[in-house]
Structures are given as C-alpha cells and as structure tokens.
Image (cartoon, rainbow, N blue to C red; front, side):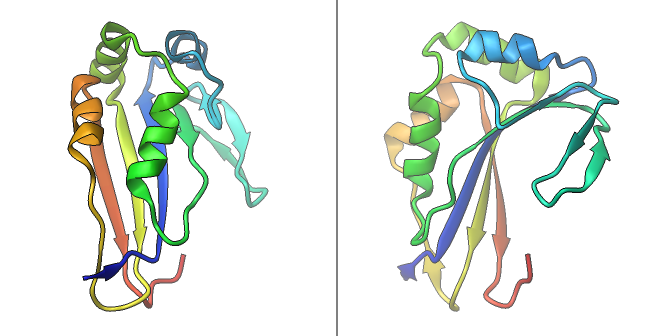
Length: 138
C-alpha cells in the first residue's frame, strides 16, 4: 500500500438550534466557521450562502503527504478536555470529524492510531470519510 497523497480534516457540529457561541464557550476555541441557521456567510471562494442549519466547524490545514492522524490530534489538542461537555455537544449536534482523502494513484492508504480512535470515541464523535480518486476534480 502506498502513502496517501493528501488529507483534509474538519471537526463539525450541526443543528437547527445550534448557537456557535455555546460551542465556542464549551470547547474553548473560535471556529473556522460558526453560523446560526438562516444567517448568511461568505465561502472561501467568495460566494454568499444562507445556512440551511446552524454549524460550528474547525478546520485543520490540509496535509500533503497525508497525515489524518496528526490533523485530528492537532485539532483535539487545542480544545477542552472536559469529556462531559464533548459528549453533550456531540449528542445534541451530531459531532463528527470530516476527513477528506485524496488519492494520487491506485493503491494508497492510511491508518489511525488506537489513541486517536480512543480520543474520538470518548468524546462521542463520529468520523466521516470522503474519498476522492486520482481523477476526481474538486
């Protein structure tokens, strides 16, 4: 198995009644994007959008070559260690890590260490993988 080309990681919470200020206070960090349902925001490409639901998202920098394990831990290291807060927020707002996997060739792979998986589990977080083939246009 070859080394994974590139990875992206983002922690997110979503919900119609989500208040980004509450999540920021609970986790102790400002989000990359924090928005209430129905509010407008501007995407990185400059497009204005109306939020269909509330969200609080914190993005790690993309890595090339990929280092998903490092990206997840980098984000978690900068946030609260209060597991009760994490579990409450995750249960109410579908807490998840979005992980983008970008392939450059046929057979690439990655792994997540047991300690990383434990950190995700003890916080009640899901992990969501999107895998883009070598010919994918993003």
